[in-house]
Length: 98
Image 1: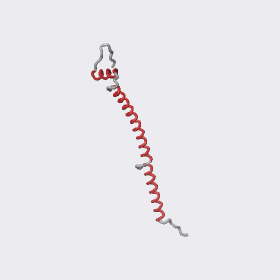
Image 2: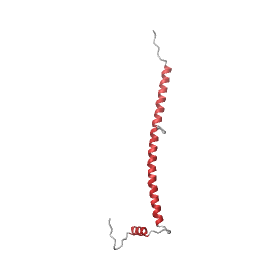
Image 3: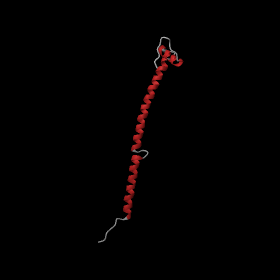
Image 4: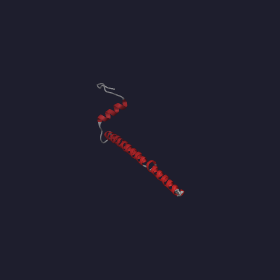
């Protein structure tokens, strides 16, 4: 009885198919549009949204202070506080704690 070997073409076909499958699997996980890159982009997006909310809160605070010092609405306590802070002055009856 004679042994038959698998033809070389069949082996090359399966080897090529395996290599393509490994390449596409690697690209799906590690590539530019892969799973890991997507997770990285989502984490960066969450971080930027948190930073945006902090910046928006700071802008709202600054708008409030600006409105309180405007000509149409003048908060004398805030004006006094800002003038003292800029000039570095205190009244004689005040105690400064640093």
